[in-house]
Amino acid sequence: MLRQDRFWHYACQLYGNKQIEEVLLHFQDAHGKNVNLCLLLDYLAVLNQQLSQADVNALIQCAEKLDEQLLSPYRIIRRTLKIEHSTSPSYSTARTSLLNAELELEKLQQHYLIEQVNTCSTSHNTGANNLALYLPESLVQQFLSAKS
Image (tube, rainbow, N blue to C red; front, side, top):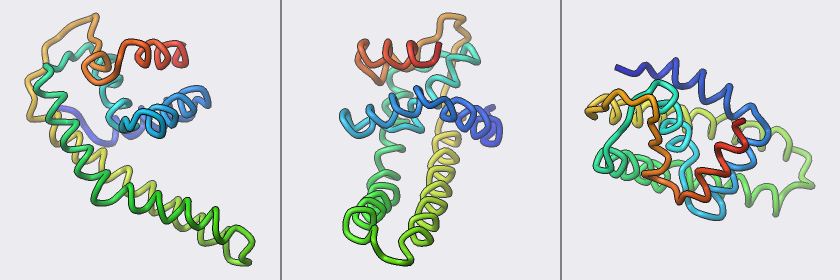
């Protein structure tokens, strides 16, 4: 059973790597991929836990639902603020507040992803490669290259 706090710690540590951050944001912006899901799939591989394609599909649906309901609207507001209101005297405070709220929404999404993955039947596999069930091979290689 995965614990959300351990995954959060792993995700924050890995995302703290500037190369990983850039690669994952590129996946999100250019390919419509979910950053939290990429991090979770990698985390499971580090734990030698392999998912099935059906399980990954269920995680994709979970992530997409929360992206649509919560995260995407927040990102639009934050980007609009930056483009349209960056000269406002309260811009910095508003941006910080939005970033903090977005971070909490990311944490909420991780909670639901962990709940979903805990219903999955993983198999022990020292060569686990869950990202390959979500990303094209070229993106998997970009991620692994940034990670090393």
